[in-house]
Length: 193
Image (cartoon, rainbow, N blue to C red; front, side):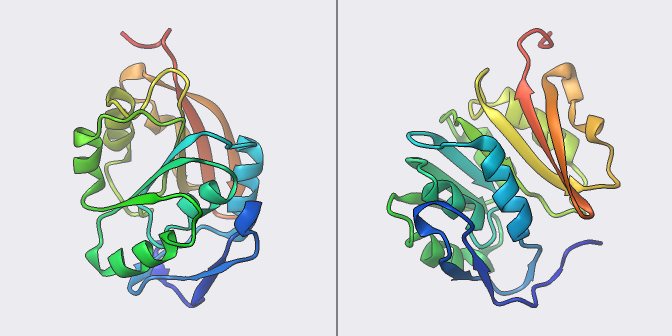
């Protein structure tokens, strides 16, 4: 299992107007995304000015904060662990725009939300067994349209193509960071049956 108790008590924002700011990590089991990975992912995405961004399995809220720091204007963060609520909300208040925080199961949020996002970052625990179903439900939900970019952080040993359930998602590319990978996926209208 790749999740572990967090030893570092703070995370650092890697770019944008909040560059260098530190935030505390929430208590309990957490696998924070590495500085190198976050910096690389946001470098690939590029300018987020005016964009909408969804951070699923948000934890500390660091991904949403990175997006806000780089110009995203509409942000939502979803975390199911109620023990992380106080830290997530506190961290989110650092942003110059509001980050809408939801403490609820990610699966329920996906079913209920009617908002489409330009960018969706999904960082489930590595031990989460329903990634195929999760990504399929995102692709079929209102969260994602034909211009949305969906990113998932996964273990390197997992097969990337397991995410393309129902032939809806296509892999744009993958980026490797030590033992983890971020896959960049999009909804391919030519693959939808």
